Length: 245
Ligand SMILES: NC(=O)c1ccc[n+]([C@@H]2O[C@H](COP(=O)([O-])OP(=O)(O)OC[C@H]3O[C@@H](n4cnc5c(N)ncnc54)[C@H](OP(=O)(O)O)[C@@H]3O)[C@@H](O)[C@H]2O)c1
Image 1 (cartoon, rainbow, N blue to C red):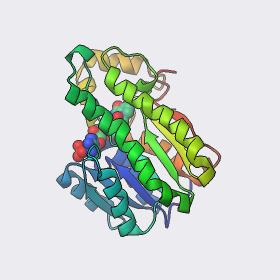
Image 2: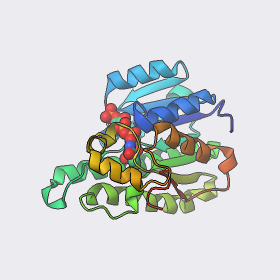
Image 3: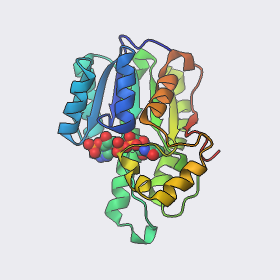
C-alpha cells in the first residue's frame, strides 16, 4: 500500500467510527490529518490518540461558512491538501409523513450541502496536489428501504455529485470517488444493532456473514486515495461484505 508521508488528509466526522478509523489508517501510513466534528471533547480525545500528526477543528459542517473555514484552517495548519474525505453524515429513519422540515433540512445540509461546499473550497488546493476526494455514501443510496427516503436520497445525491464532479474536476487532475459502506458497527447504526430481528436480517443478507467494522471501510478509503487508484474516478465502491449485490 502507498505511503502517505508528506500528504495532508482532511476528514469530516473524524472523531468517531469510520472517520476515526480512516484517520488512524492514514496516520499509520505517514499522513498528517485534520479531523472535524461538532463534539470538541470527542475530537480532542481522538486527536490525542492519533498523536502529533493530527489536528482537530470543532465545526458543524451543516452551517453556512463552515466548509470554507475548515479548508482555510487546514491550509493554515499544514500548508496543503491532498485528500478530502467527506465522511460526516447524519440520518433518521421513519416515514416521510412524520419527518419535519427541520429534519429534512438538517440531513440534506449535512449530507449534501456540506460535501459540495467542501469540495468547492478544496478544489484550488487539490488541483495543486493532484489530490483526491472520497465521499462516504451508503448501500442505502441504491436500495429501496421504506422509511429511509430522506437519508437514502441524500446519499444518492452524493453518488451523482461524485460522478459529475469526477468529470468536472478530472481535467485538473483531481479524482472523485465514493465508498458506500454496508451496515457497519458504529454509533450511527446503534438503533439497528439493538433490534435483533433487523440485525439478523441484515447479516443474513450479507454474504460475508457479519457487520462491517470501521476498519473495513477505512481500508477502502485508503485504497481509493492511494496513487495505485490513480486511474479510478467517478466510482461508487461498495464496501458492505456483499450486502445489496
Ligand atoms: N455505520 C453504518 O452502518 C454506515 C453505513 C453506511 C454509511 N455510513 C456513513 O458513514 C459516515 C460515518 O458514519 P459512522 O458510521 O462512522 O457513524 P458515527 O460514528 O456516528 O460518525 C458520524 C460522524 O459525523 C459527525 N457529524 C455528524 N453531523 C455533523 C455535523 N453537522 N457537523 C460535523 N460533523 C458531523 C459526527 O460527529 P459530531 O456528532 O461530533 O458532530 C460523527 O463523528 C456517515 O456519512 C454515514 O452516513 C455509515
